[in-house]
Image (cartoon, rainbow, N blue to C red):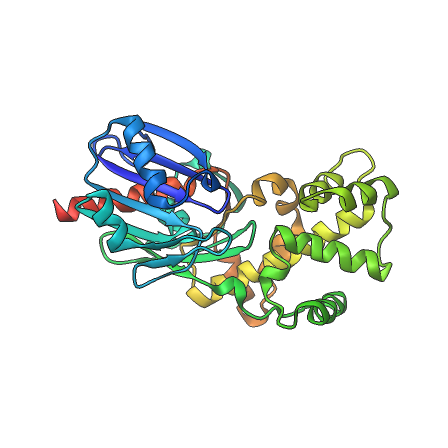
Length: 332
């Protein structure tokens, strides 16, 4: 049996998986608050003691860049070193990977019920696959066919320079530059990014704010869910929130198209993360795909690519399990 995990700054999901049951069917699974544990070894050891499972290998998706087997988490003061953690846990093998890389690794084993189709397209067998995920930040990854299976690769493309496409987006860029200096796509295509766009529109007077909603947003510890709810109301949505979400969706579509071009994603594009399932109706409107396709002479190529939204909230755990089972198989 192997251990698989999705370790985030807020919560961690761990599971025990057996080869005969595969990556979608854990023997046991648990979700805990990351901050309740001083280090990853204590967290994992506590889980293993509770399960009593005989585990010999593992794979962990980490919410941080992974370089040479080391992950330095940003919002949690943890430094996770693959070899050190493997030795302390007594595993024969252990792999750590970026959490978006883990999401990408789940795609070959996802089923139709795990995603929503935004655009059917004409996917090419063995074609590269692009993955991007707006949540706390903007994660990006991709899959490449290696003859016998797809292999997931990490990327930090969400931190690439934001390129405005309209006069309004150019004004947004100047506003964000005055606040942050460098402006990446993550400054817009993320939970905090939605609030950045809302704040710009409110300050500029470019959209009408509902007084009650504005007060609720000001008082909220996390204003993004309030903005999304107010924008998606069927009865009298907040105009300012609705425009902020419209800009978010348009910029996200443009960046999805950018990533698709960069990795030549003829196998398809998947949008993951915590936000997209909550705004699936907005993503299915024409704004997202119009921005995605709007690549001049290469627009025809984008139109061929399938675009899907991953609705399964545990795709990173599934991907870590799939990778862990594959690694264990090659070493057995």
